[in-house]
Image (tube, rainbow, N blue to C red):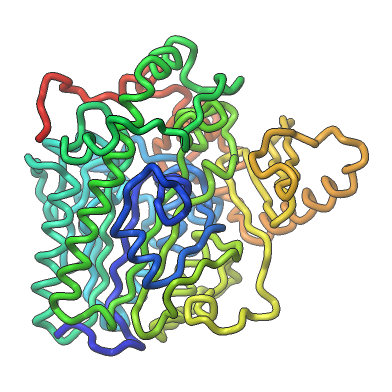
Length: 490
């Protein structure tokens, strides 16, 4: 009956799409309604300093799966081409994923939802179920999906459809003796937002003041352009209603899966991990978007910090909040350690297991208190007190004193009294990346723009760039709206 062994638990790994760490009730946002995730946090541990490895979906997801940084696995931007068809590209070909290790250790693996790492229509061989989004984003109704290797369309609301399929998978696996790994990857709350979500959830926010999303002046680097920004400002309220509704609808969908796990008496032998791929600015810093919401790309905490909750009753002590600085590259080694699996990478890797934190044991004495991030030519090193952002080749660089300026409002890079601090952080950043970067996949010199990846990073050549220079639409704002605004959601 699936796994009944707490030490070798089933794993439900849930990833949301573009959910800021601020967009969670249990994180202190009293406007957004997330009762399922709030309950999950009460039953487990919530991390309030968890960071993605890159503030955009595809590289961040690749890092969770591989345990590597983007300049090692080679995915540096959202995958724009190569998802399906004859020109498909497997951006992680030849690389070992955490699911590969789990499968070798007897786990039955399934993917339901977003993949967005190329070759979505070719199920990875170790998966017993593969239901992937054809690209990585799109409409919530009539969503284009891949059922094993066949294209199909989901006519209902996508978050509900993914939840229903996950419930069915848990129910079927309960009849088998092996443990399961279920990747449940929502597209929520990624745009489109307006007229894209059930009224049951949009009605929750009709009177919401949205104080958690301040309406700030346009950021000077905002990537959308003035006409786009003005349209967004004019429809700001409708967009926020849609974003918040998408989160609440996803929360309800996750609740149905957790209810099925409990119904099958698997709660104490199932590890539940919830996190997002990257953060999101919904007006924060005058930006609508994540790391590529500005050009050059940004590394604000609202872009790089993600929600993360982990629970397993009876093994993970409940009701805790961890302030440890952790990253997506720590997930792979933690899960291997947690279930007693092993894998020889044959080289040094950036992540470290935080199993001790999960289980409430004293933290290891040598635990790192620094996290690193990258988005092409933009790199970040962050301690509890400082954040240094370096942009190759010539800047602009940034230094924020986080303990005194948690909102990252004052760039101190030119303060002569802090020259030693800047030099130390720059040295740490350069040494760390030099340790882990694969020169063929180094994003610092590949021309990553935030407009999408077209091919493998190692294929980048003069005259044949593999990173797009422009967005699919000039202003790109119409992608935030539903394509069919005449439809009525119930």
